[in-house]
Image (cartoon, rainbow, N blue to C red; front, side):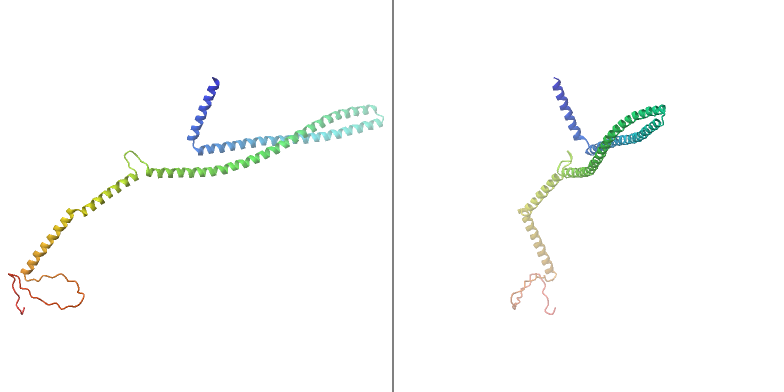
Length: 273
């Protein structure tokens, strides 16, 4: 049963993480990743500084131990020489004192040599650790710089992705319905083209219909009747009716004038007029 609940909890956690990653802003997540890398580099530098400080500390202790060792060596040599001089001078008491002093110095000398050996080992290890820490800081610094460069590149790609998404959304809005009461551009275009085609078809039918031809014939008859009435009025007034221009003949010909009797009720002009 506990195994089941653990698996269920892992499943729910994975689902929550996936939903969170889908909704999270990539720019903020990128800033968080870079901030974490910078904090890690800072902690590494602080640790390296502690290691280097320990190296300097052991170096100072080793220098002091070496100085002390040098002094003890000199004191031991001096105590042995003075004990020998006192022995030669026949002063057994001073010779014994100098000998005991030399022995004490020798004991201190042994302890100092042991301390120097330990400090040398510590200094060697501290130096190795300091070198490793410096190398780690340098390497991590290069990695951090690469991450910063990658950050700028990713931010540029993110902005391009946002612009492309906005462009895609704008293009999609041209072919999708904006709202329930707002038609799309395609729908309006189809409607206008359909009405135009319908009107064009009706116009062609009207131009070719029998009613249209009858109206044209009536208009032509009315024009001819009006022209005939105007010709009568001109004849009554003695005004010659202007004949329409005849087409040019292909060959010159002499046209014989034929006199037609004047119409009834039309006054004749005198020959001298």
